[in-house]
Amino acid sequence: MPRGKNTNVYLVCKECKMQNYTTRINKKTTTKLEHKKFCVKCKKSTEHASGSEIKHSS
Ligand SMILES: [Zn+2]
Image (cartoon, rainbow, N blue to C red; front, side, top):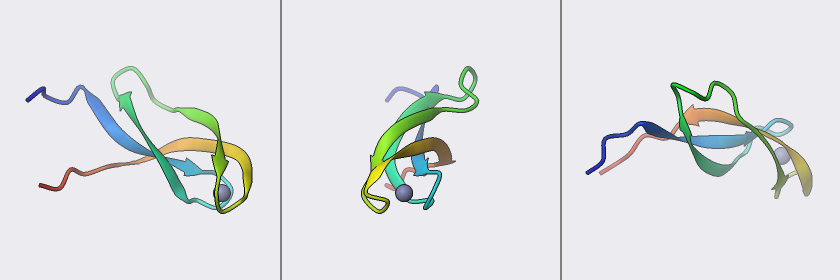
């Protein structure tokens, strides 16, 4: 199993705080990530920022 350089994080809608997407970032090189994505709750494209880390459950 590869050891995680990359961290799975949620992409959170800045307007409603919904965790709509997940992405992988390298925490050593990426501090803040922002994407314009469609939010199902806002029903429009909004800025999504990288949020809390996703914990793996096994
Ligand atoms: Zn939203």
